Image (cartoon, rainbow, N blue to C red; front, top):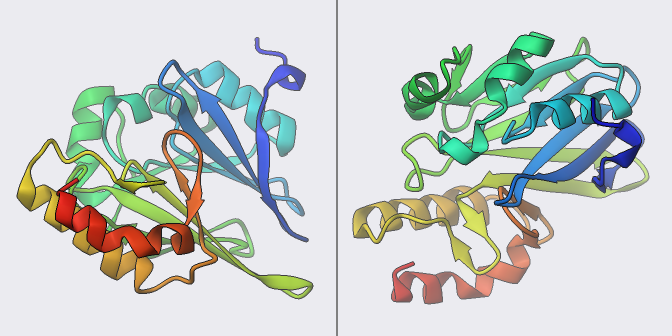
Length: 229
């Protein structure tokens, strides 16, 4: 068993009731995100990408061991390798975008218990303290979903965190395999459903590598469209 004290995670956000931590797993630097309600210890995991033993130990290190749900950003194999084991070990509720459900099931033999669509809100815990909005970003995969956390706090400005999967990175949108239609779809969704809705201060946490903010990337949207990737 992995020693929880040795897990090199990073606290990326905290307030009076919530901690959000990031962990890199696999040779592909997949980023997994753990949201913990500090009052109850209940948790939500975004992308069980790889190394289920470490993910389970990580959750146990920061909460009470109650993993309520695993949210999958998209169906690609490198973001789902630990999904079956984590879901079975914890009985966590499994959630993904509606158009990616079948691909995940075929790939991992996992039943996605809730298929979500653009605009749906999710709330977890007895008091619904863990709240996220589902934002459909079609193009990297048909059912790619960004999960958006907005935290009003009495002692600080509201914080917006966007867990974008492989749909938005520093410097551009995700891979669309040089397909102009898929690229246009993804960039349109990213533009209208993220940049047109959320403030420049919104933090973007992708499925690989480091994050960014909408304000940092906003000036480059037309450049991305012109270059075609």
